[in-house]
Every structure is written in structure tokens, then in C-alpha cells.
Image (cartoon, rainbow, N blue to C red; front, side):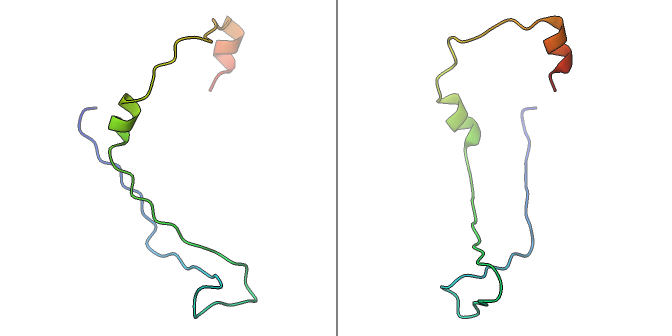
Length: 66
């Protein structure tokens, strides 16, 4: 794949924490977080490649690997 678009979104989320005017003390505290991650491929390509710690797998290990 050279061109692709991944989009995941939940349309509605409701927070409940002590910093909100509508805080309900009867319910557990819940926060919302919005992440917008861009250039994940560029970040990945700037990381070091593994250079050791490899091992060969036997046939039974290959068959049980997901």
C-alpha cells in the first residue's frame, strides 16, 4: 500500500470529573483525551533498526505463533 487513510472516531464521549460544572459525585470520575497523531510513518522511519537479539524458531514455535 502506498496511499491509505485510517480514521477512527467515536462520535460521543462524556467526561465526569471534579473540574466540570456538571460533575456527578455519584458516578466514577472519567476524563476524555483527544489525540491527533500525524507523521507516524516518518517517526517510525527515524528510529534505529534492531541489530541483535534474534533467534531462529523451530517448526512448532512457528505453528503456534499468531
